[in-house]
Length: 120
Image (tube, rainbow, N blue to C red; front, top):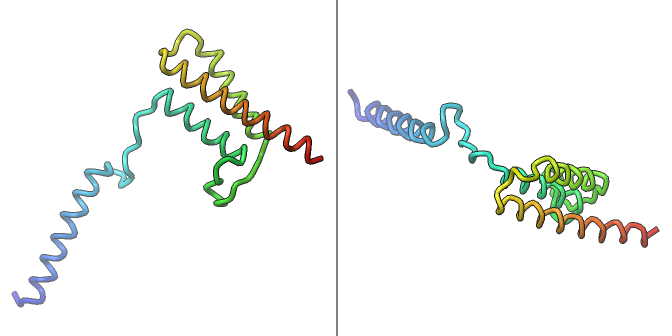
């Protein structure tokens, strides 16, 4: 076997081994594994969506801060509904987190709504 072919074979073997290692870390699909779903993760995700709709964070799709108050209200109302439907089924930490998230989002929504009213 000539030296050039041997180097190619060795490079290929190294690449395959590296790919196997990556696949083990990423799962069979090649996509990194997601964290386990938890109630706290779920409400935090909704809160982030509401913050984007309130214009507090950049929209990842447009990379701009954009306000969409009806969307923000819908998400806040959804979190409020979750609070009512899960009453007495949450841990103290989950209950506190949800109450704090709702308080902050509602205060920000009211503030943004007043800004819109004053601008007209």
